Length: 257
Image (cartoon, rainbow, N blue to C red; front, side):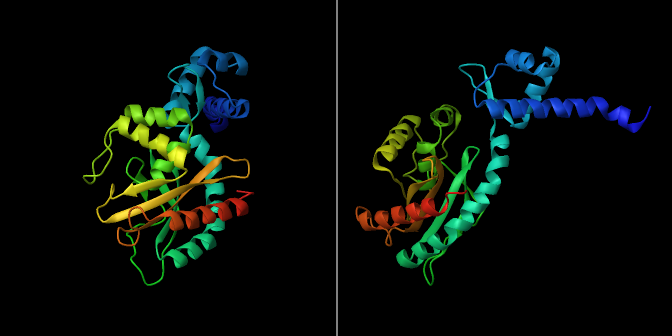
């Protein structure tokens, strides 16, 4: 028996797994395992193994209420990574300008699983610099960019986060109650901005706003970070307006991202 013949069953399994991913992606809806088997003509036992394998790997995920499957975080991230790189490049000059104007550190963040990840950063010249970097992951419940992500991602994501995640306390101001965080998310949606008021780190305050695509889809959180002296509590209107203008400028230049 040749090597090609030996690998045929493995090749067929890979082809079927890819077919399942493409089917779920193109249909843009949830599918139960039995329907996946029927629609693709894959034996139920084989479909069962492949679907569970893809689920464990994070490429598809099961919706608890409907028992249907949809694309998982890893599958979605494959298509997003290129767009994130383009978005970070587009955002960079606008963030540099904002950092220069405000003398604050500027971050652009996206969701990465149950955390936020910085995909771009701009430091102000000759001012306080924060120990953050592109690629750093931060918690959602205690950061301004994280709260923006929770408020603007799909509702079922926030629901799952509130139901299953533990909220580590970083300071005395950290929100650790799901009910309190739920109320905060609603407030963020209403106000269109989020604040980290010494919740991740004492003496540090952050503001964040959403960035949207041309179609109005949420794509990232833009935030500024500074000391409580740089961002006085209750005196953020002018700063918030500047951050929003920058988010809008990124939106206008991110049409193809």
